[in-house]
Length: 493
Ligand code: BG6
Image (cartoon, rainbow, N blue to C red; front, side):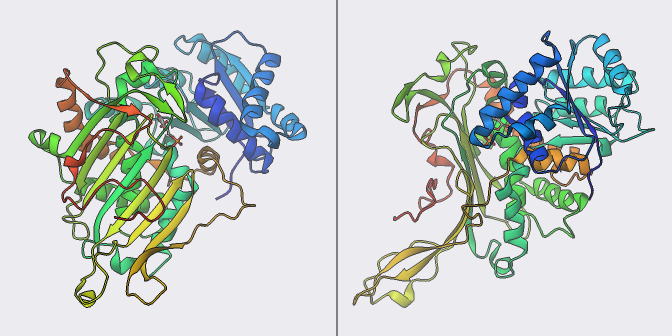
């Protein structure tokens, strides 16, 4: 698919996401000659900045992210694309003035609106864009990128969808889940569907259970306001982790085309066994970080963070067990967990295979044997490892675990930020890595009973020391032989 010149209009251009991700990603795309000739970027912000101040702000954003890779010549070219539009997005003049600005011939008529604003503002922003005919596609396409969370629960997601569908068709909506833009996440599909040896064993006959962990060392920084209303279940599990689960467990799609891929992902979400309210405690666990140490530094508890009420029971750690009731996965537990202020920052998918029969070794020194695992490191280490049992050198018949490594990035191959990939896909009109509404809807259906139960249990939440692997939640596991796996190197049991 070819990318056509377009105008990227970023709402919330002075905010965190734009600083850390969007502007650096657009700059890197420009540096890689991937932004079509004539592409322009309009940043909308409330602050009374002129063009000069905006350019110096964007320079800071990019320098901070690029470090030694910052290139003055490329930045000059990039800055020619930039335009600041000062306005209050809650007020109509912001939109009439924007419509006037975009009328200028220097702005391509294909326009992508990136809504990096609070979800509560999505509806109003779209209504005012629509009132100013900015979604009319007479002389170019119009696309809207929406950040998560899409709604707060199933009802609010449906209400939001109903409202935005007054202004936009589904083809114009790009619901972003930046996890799908990560190189290693896309590699999960290649690993599964380009290696024929995996398919026969990728099912309940061979796989004991699957774990997905996303742990972070950082706390909530200055996002207290948003985070306290969301919590880990909404912030990470309902979106990113369930998406990872669908990619690992879905049936092979007919093709990589958006609808084929999304159809298969939805089928997985629909097949997940609903969690009854009375079963929530057996399927989900929540915790909140207490004081502790990260990299040797003492850090505050969640309750001591800025904007957090003293009696908050918002979870900063959430884990859950799911079952996918289909032919491939019936009876295989899927364990998902995420937390802030944990021992290590990493995202991994760990697939644990069943034990082989050990009869063969009965008269030897082999006492027990580790199971085979497939480990997919998403970040920071990107890797694919298969753990096998091998004989130890020597006269005895004893074994150890060895790891076959199919890591795919060479030292001279640069990692690409997820946003680069996704921002380019919007220009190309490729929606395969964006969420269709039914995916969001079914994901809410899965977590809603948990959220509803937690919402009324407001007296107590387990805590865990910052810098640990989270609270004690082993009750989630089906068997005593199952436990969280935190390492990408062989673990001896
Ligand atoms: C965001 C969450 O969607 O993903 C954050 O809102 C979280 O709380 C972040 O820190 C993690 O993304 P990444 O790419 O740093 O793993």
